[in-house]
Length: 226
Image (tube, rainbow, N blue to C red):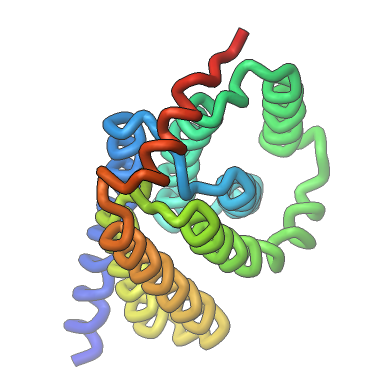
């Protein structure tokens, strides 16, 4: 029976990694179609970038097998693309602080990858990843509620997030039974469900012909980068 569970967990783990290849794609495509990032908080994306970067670098610098953490760099690359579009539609991309922060970030990443910076730093930063993930999801909810609009939010992305987190609870249970990891994935599942419910609520509450929605859209269209 244990062999069957192990095999099923392995298959489920592979499916989870494959699902993560498309986790943010529906969200990115939705923003491109709407030409809007309304309801998506930059703070949430920053926390995701930091969290996934720490997880990826920690595993990379410790020379762990790539298949045990492949989902993190895959999601991180998608967050980069999503971040670019949010900055673009929020008319922040042209500000001088963006290239400066990008250069600083890339320098830190290169420092850890080339062993210029001690990898022990990442060990101290690892416990911050679960809270960062949680606060990122709370920020997503806050952004939707603040904007009273979820047009730019992809429901598919959050459905994938919920299913992958649920599958990770099972794979961790079979592999190690680590209660801390299982608790982290459980909390992540609950928060992802909360974001999905919030987005569903505001998608129903804000039809395309809502006057407030039209005024916000018109105001954004008048703002351009010099």
